[in-house]
Amino acid sequence: MRAKWIGLLIGLIVGISGCTPKEAAPTEPKAAEPAPAPAPAEEPAVDPVAAASEIFQSRCIVCHGEGGKGDGAGSAALDPKPRDFTSPEWQDSVTDEHLRKIVIYGGSAVGKAATMPANPDLDAKPQVVAELVKYVRGLGK
Image (cartoon, rainbow, N blue to C red):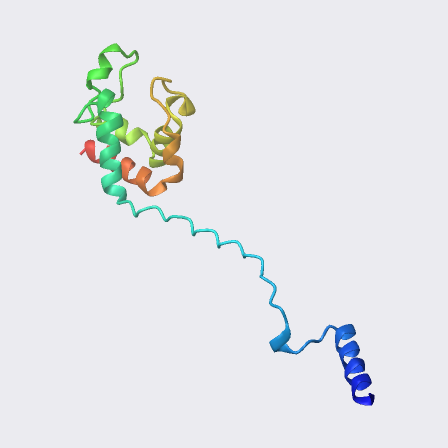
């Protein structure tokens, strides 16, 4: 009888303390941890020279023309006419910063014709804009 009481007492102590032998402990399912957020996809590396050339071909040629003389197909309906990038006088009269501002913010940003559209998507691509400026500068040579 004494052994029963000792066993009962041990069982009571273990029960009260919450300690149960490991092999007898029921395993509670753990809450599923949320999956880690996927890493943001890296933008593919862009060659700024190629990007600038593509942008000039797709956006600028329409009005400024292939050679940059301001004689593109869209220039006929514009007043004032688009800038002739081949003009040495004009090339000498503008800074690279001026050109950068026109490319990104449009003609209105520098007191020129509002028909020169802004390209706000290029604001986050300074290397591409720098290459566009070089491209325009190259047309004056």
